[in-house]
Image 1 (spheres, rainbow, N blue to C red):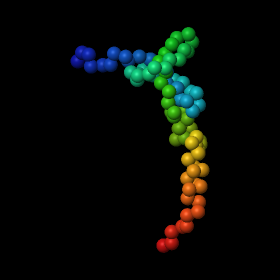
Image 2 (image 1 turned 135 degrees about the vertical axis):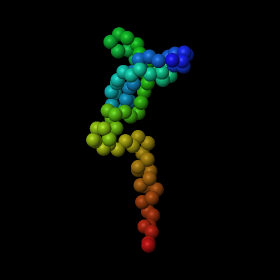
Image 3 (image 1 turned 90 degrees about the horizontal axis):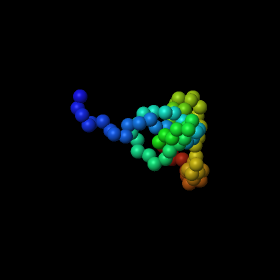
Image 4 (image 1 turned 90 degrees about the vertical axis):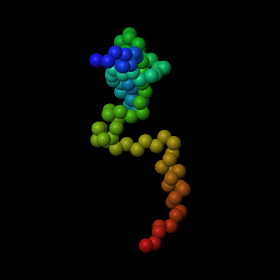
Length: 86
């Protein structure tokens, strides 16, 4: 095998789903400045917006996430438009 081709910072990291606070351990070389302490041990923390524990495909639940009011903005912008005639 070739020497020195693997990353030097390959270690156990904690990935945290910010939508449901679920955490899981994975070996990774992802760069991060955050840390989390679990059972007295500090691990690098990688924050994610969505994972298999919160994605509708895996959970079977459809959830509309509208934090910026985009749906309301779209509806107010286009509610007075006429439907095209064919």
